[in-house]
Amino acid sequence: MSTGSFKDTSPYQSFAVTVDVAAFAVDQGQLHIALIERGNDPHQGKLALPGGFVEPDEDLPDAAVRELVEETGLALNSDVLRQVAAYGQPGRDPRMRVVTVVYWVVVDSLSGLAGGSDAADVVVLPVDHALDHPELLAFDHHQIIGDALRAVNTSVR
Image: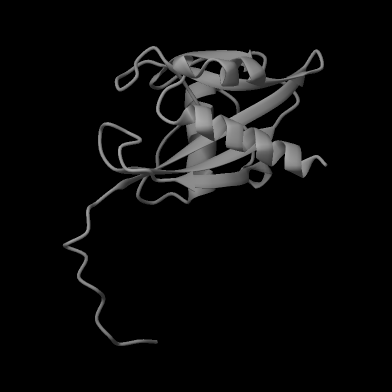
């Protein structure tokens, strides 16, 4: 065990960590994604991936499962989540510096979901529609959905 001192981090900007989940299902032969309608600013009324801030005592996959349940009612086990990537572009969230870790999952059905917590509603759209209309999406979720779709496509080959 090292007895050295830790580095002074005071010159570094603090930032928050969030998680987002791209939940997909096939319906009538077409891949769909669950998005929430944001109930609060920033981007109130826009569509976003279910997600939110990680609590200080939470592991990332556990936070993803919690946020998915709170915002959509979709309950699943964290071991079915697969990580897409982390996104930390400065300015991606107007509130503060935020780094998000994104997960994807394919489930049997996205029916019966309902908005909860800070989600005004849940919208299930064909993925192609979401990608064809970036103006509907909050933050950098257009890029993230595209990346998640590529991860899904890679895993099923």
